[in-house]
Length: 271
Image (cartoon, rainbow, N blue to C red):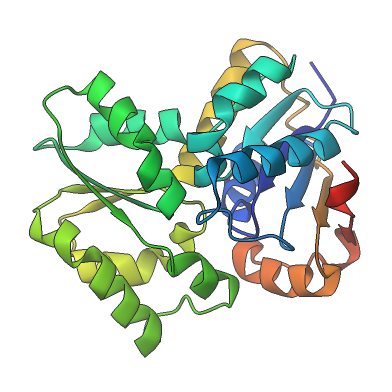
């Protein structure tokens, strides 16, 4: 048993979809979450900037004595994961491999769509990971840069005409390709699950990258016999690089509960 916490980070709030699944799957685990809300989104940044930000995010999390880090950010997972693994001596998991495995397993026709930020789609990481598992797969990838700001602004519900129009515009070529499985290649996107599912139709299975990453973390810690006592209530601490009040208000949408007494603002530029 290992009582140290798990660190989780994202460019903003989206990684909370992963945290929510980790709380469900690993109720005894302590979690330290950092959302870089002052610099969100990462998706349109250069590779060099993304790597620099990711290093700072990890440096902050490593100020705690962690047993593992989950990169709950598609952009960082596709752009900086290998760098972070080389530079750190503890397990670091991204969202790409777990989601790729789920997509390759679930698809019936091998026709898979991938949506993500510009940086994620530009990297080709999901395509490479899926093709390695399912070489015959037909892949359709689409960058959706406006979805993260919409989610961060709470525009996630059915009936929001702006969100529905943006989803339709982005996903039209993916739907036209006839995919039967769609990888939500950004941890913000599960908040748009209803809107995306309505547009894509009941015949398309959506892959929640946050949920798959949480499962991968659970599997890793189980194999290494490093799980905390599942009978205890894990402690969760949340940090943001911008307003703690704004973070807490939006986090309620992601987590389904009030965490205003557990959020602290930190100066990420100091790391």
